[in-house]
Length: 185
Ligand SMILES: [Zn+2]
Image (tube, rainbow, N blue to C red; front, side, top):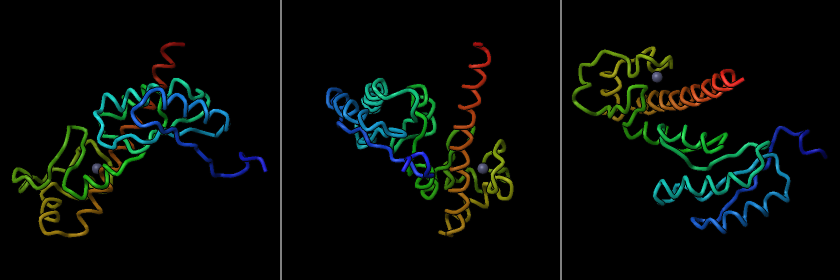
């Protein structure tokens, strides 16, 4: 069966810890599989970020440019553009949902730690620039109340917002790439 007939795609995972030679050796071996895409694994396991980025750069240089690359387990909102600049097409991470549940919300203006007293009477939406359901319907003060009360609704609303923030960042990056392409042609 032609693998492209299915909606699924198998991505082999390039490993090699923090050793560039092992990363290169693994990536070379994976090329023989002629896969639909390639994953870069073993990142965000406690290593310094510059080392993580170095491993991505080392691996990416070997992987075919015509296939999507997927960096596993990254990253913070401010890091996404860096990974894209290194040639990464997709990422996944627990951060938007885990941080949301723990009271850390990502906005276009920076982070909001919702438990802080300064939000007690703050009637503004979490992020005025965001069009998500949470920001359209609930105030910072109400989200803070839900968080402090331990209401499950808080986790749902906060997660919904943080995931939207990540999607917005990736959309902005895609738009920037398209604009750059148009300007350069
Ligand atoms: Zn929002």
